Image 1 (cartoon, rainbow, N blue to C red):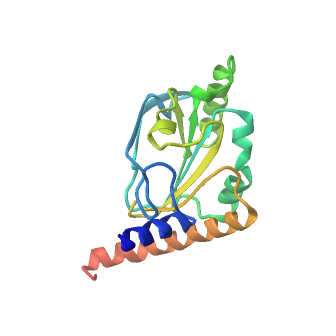
Image 2: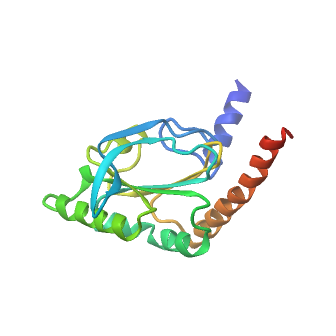
Amino acid sequence: MLKKMLVLIAALSTPFAMAGDVPAGGRLPDLSISERGELVLQGDDVGYQAWTYPQQPGKVHVVQYMAATRAASKINEPFTDRMKTDLPQGAFLSTTILNLDEAMWGTGGLVVSELKSNKQQFPNAILVADADGVGLKQWQLEKENSAVIVTDPAGVVRFFKQGAMSDAEIESTLQLVRQYIAEVPAAAEHAASGTP
């Protein structure tokens, strides 16, 4: 009984504790978004395909899930701006998921149009439109907010935050991503050589 209580206290005190059913050092529940989904370029146009999580095992993954509102898009802009300038592009996965179910009435079309424009401007970006808010429910996230989740190459959650990140959190999370990116080539070399 005492051991269980100590484990619970440790999980609650760690900065990586997740909302909902995901424990510290755990994994995000699998997610499938089929209504709209990932934006894909089709010539000069943009279409959709079903999107699932997890994606590309073996890569560090930074996921941002947010309400499709102007206010939510600004919450973690300082972090996403730093990601573009401070991290090696292509060395990790970056996925932005917009919950269209939370778009203000009458703005859904504008949000989708802006998403398509962003996809055309940044073709390598992974942009996902969650028409029914499936991710919000599956990952038990807060409404009208923005969440940042970092998973290591094994898919283990290493950082989770809903709401605005502090300057210190931005710095430590960027360092965390860099750390796991640096470990990926070493892990691949060990796997190729059979070295444990």
